[in-house]
Image (tube, rainbow, N blue to C red; front, side, top):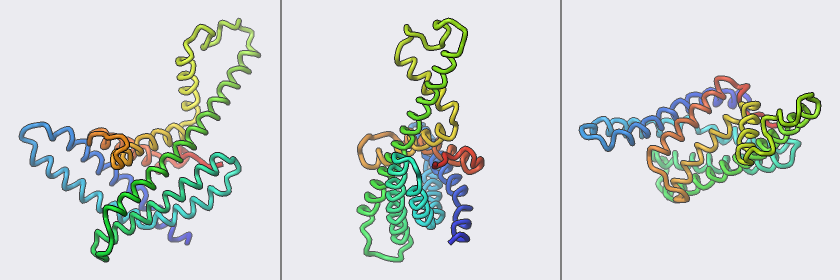
Length: 246
């Protein structure tokens, strides 16, 4: 099992690279579609996007094993909220990969008795649930970080010899400005949390569009997927920037 996980781990970086290429093609196609004389380029981008999307399915075949392992690990998390969010998220991710594997079997012609539209809808729905739960975990972690920053600031102000008006956030400061400043300081202090939140926010644009919950154009989906893929690549190249589970 460990050998298999190490092998499939090597494909995660390639999958992220392919995903970035796929969404870059989508974004470029959107930008060029309205321009005259770019029809041939648009068709080539569309063909490349389709080929890359098909190739990515090979890299995802073993991911159901990672989802099972991640579910087992999330059950051991001590904090109740992250444990609940991560466990349910990983269960939905596991179902998503199962659906994705069935769709791959259908696409290569190994079976003809698969309703592609139904399985695609199931896959998209469980991917959406996975991202919602992941964002709920991110929100919880952000609130914890904001609480720590606010507590540290209060301690500094209490021990400081400067007058009360010296604080960056005074009583006259607008509450929204105070909140945004606290949010900025919290995410600046915790880059892995920032990366994970940005990645999940960008990713959720895809199922929102596919499920018809919030329709976006091809450019928005392509840009969101590209940003998410780059964030994912960063966490693979620099593992210390991956959000850890405690």
